[in-house]
Length: 411
Image (tube, rainbow, N blue to C red; front, side):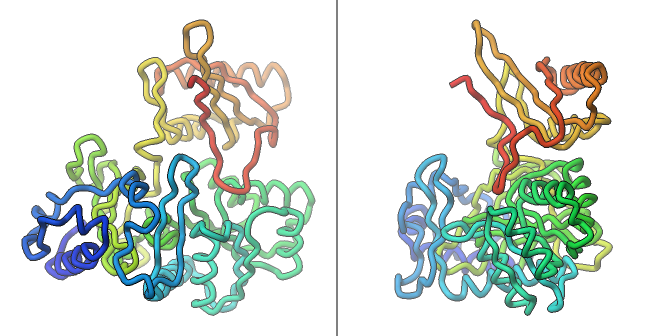
């Protein structure tokens, strides 16, 4: 994105705040913000990696007096030491403002009833959705995850109009509502979906089965949480709130900026954060910058819907597999549903790829023919020959949180 003189001043102020903390105090010990006079100077600063944040555990990122911290949020820590992010009251307020802006961009009003299913606690999701809805003045229904029976009953009884969920749980709810025959009792009109990448076939299926308009919301624990960007009704990327953050799109291998419109890794610098400012933080989310004005009239710039992560690729027989490429491939094949799972094993000295996918077909011969179509398409587009196995609708596991689609069992 463009770096104006005002933006550069705000970045320098953020670096000054960050240096008050132990982590950036050491990292930028020989750097004065006044020495950063241009975009080029800024791009010479080192990136911040998630491993850096783990190494700063528990409060090495803290950049203000402890007395100013009113809340702690954290990553799950499932892949290592968790990341601890401290928030001041201003950080919490700024996050609520951004989230309210997301809801407004999606067309929500005070008359809406916002049904929130993401988790609460150290995770940023549930409470972020709640903060924004309350600031908007909408009726907030803080359900949290799980207990699908109660979720659907509350949707019916309270006439929820907006569903906030991961795409995986939105699909599970859509399937359950259809199975129970209660769609005519549900009053949902919009879905705010976040926390994981999802394919176009899954998007269309959820929208059709729930009868809602869907909006992608973006965010991550390290940068406030969900709510730092959202798609508008024209569904042409996500508007990013650049009065609170500055972003770059880089080549994940070289670290250099990519050309406008080229796919790369999103890097974010916070502009207003007090508790734990982050400078040039590598999100590992893959996207591209969308140039030009949006039909909705918003002046905020856009990035494209995420296509995956630079660190979620898996190498098999020398070929890289990205979930986004598998999504795209399966979406192009009629009678293949949105749900799939890949199991990679190493047997008898070679790698084996088992690809399970759901289909509405029930005829065995037709399912066998579809498996052959999938195998041929996978070999042509991705360069590998899996063993496809068609299964019935609903046979693959559903998740109330994020779905894992590729399982590497070789190690």
